[in-house]
Amino acid sequence: MAPMVHGLEAKYFGQIQFTYLDADDPATFDFQRVLGFRYQPELYLLDANGAVLQKWVGFVTQEQLESAFAQYLQ
Image (cartoon, rainbow, N blue to C red):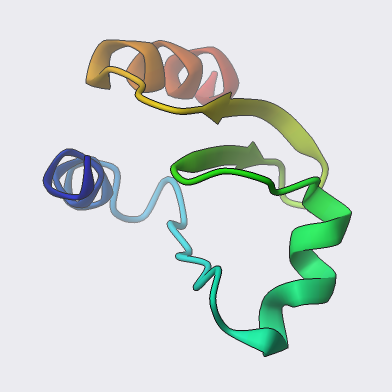
């Protein structure tokens, strides 16, 4: 999934900020708890205030992500 996500990051540069969470880094454990992180991969779409708009657990297609992006970029 990483190549697909990196491709989307390039495509949506300047419109969506992509941030990667290292699940093994103890410095991120509090943030993981706030998000309810449990499995890898997990993807979150957050608004500008950090509220979760959508969450995906497991495999997700590029089409699913782009559909959500289009909904919230309007």
